[in-house]
Length: 198
Image (cartoon, rainbow, N blue to C red; front, side, top):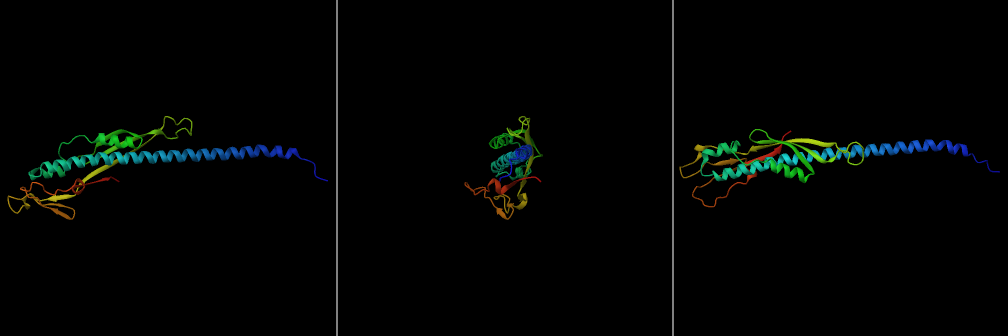
């Protein structure tokens, strides 16, 4: 003879089951929200890094162009390698790179003559549509990129008045003949390095 059906026990277990499942769902949602926020913060930092580097690289390229323009006038080389020349603003390049990383530049400021500090804000909200109330909260991040000259020269280094000073950039020496109509010139990355500041 089978035992009588005990419906009361099943009814008592159901609220516990619902509570456990509800708790697990809440934890899953919380982990998802935290993960989404972390991804958003990482995206903001990536955008800030890219924007700062883009501004600094744009200035580096302009400094390199300015050096090429004054190649035959070494009296101005020092100013260029110190960054002490007037060039076009480089922050528009930061805006472009931030936009490519789904962010907007909040501030872009020159850091002395050879650097930029950029702060960005992501376009996507921190919690996206996962967590109510976070629709208007956006991740922010900042980054600083600096330009460093790789070259040295001595204005008195020319062997004669018909030669320009030797330019030493890291482990390579560049010598230029003013009579050469098509000289081999260093690239911007040979003249300057660009990197994120710690």
